[in-house]
Length: 292
Ligand code: UTP
Image 1 (cartoon, rainbow, N blue to C red):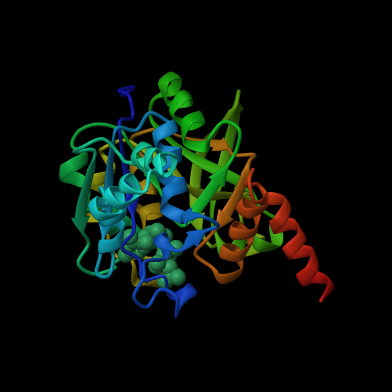
Image 2: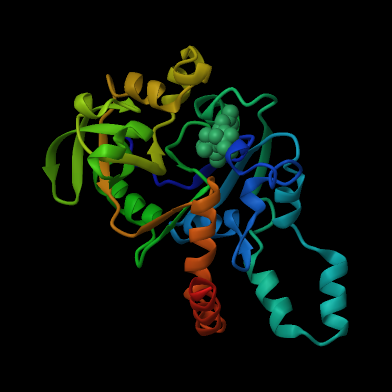
């Protein structure tokens, strides 16, 4: 079983973001600011902390600002330099990925998450890789993907982050069928998209971080559209599970779904409250708003 290190990550950003319209009419949802930086910034930081060296963004129309965000902003840097704003300048430069560390491929039509991941096949090649859904920000002392990469060094195979959700909410998510517990990991027997409460094999939802073997691309190549008429990653993972082991790693930190209006608001408030410089003021503002 391949235990090659996980060096590359796929960030699918080609979705239409219809749940946050009209904000996403001309602006990618991944670029919506969560307090002081775009949502995608947090996710790229998480990937970096896990040792990811190459980021593959699967983009679509209206997503050019993501490419610009991870590039040098020449005029801005010159202006900051001229004004002596060195701290800001250093922060901006420290955030830039290494030259050549980002690739951008187009998914010409949003045919589903599985199809978006498949679009990255040539750049990933024959090695295990991570997938991070950029509308999910995951906050924890040990970042989620770092914990998964650590587990992958030991077990190899495929690893999926899962989180407990209230049983009455399982119909909104991909849910795993758990097998035996092995230390921090849970063997997986299956998974199902949006099950009815009565049929759900557990309350462990698939939460947006994956480490997958490259054979997933063969499964995706053949994958027919599933739920919602989209090519689903879950369906291809089920196929891969016939030949390659899957483990789930329960994530116990906080998850923010910035792809919905209220989830986005919750994320902005949480990161504002946690900001060392502005947190106390954010608290005062929120409390005043609540008092009305
Ligand atoms: P979502 O279903 O959450 O994103 O897909 P969406 O389609 O943008 O959302 P709504 O329902 O219209 O609001 C999860 C992730 O997969 C990407 C999305 O960009 C998101 O990060 N995705 C989804 C693609 O890249 N391509 C697709 O065809 C579908």
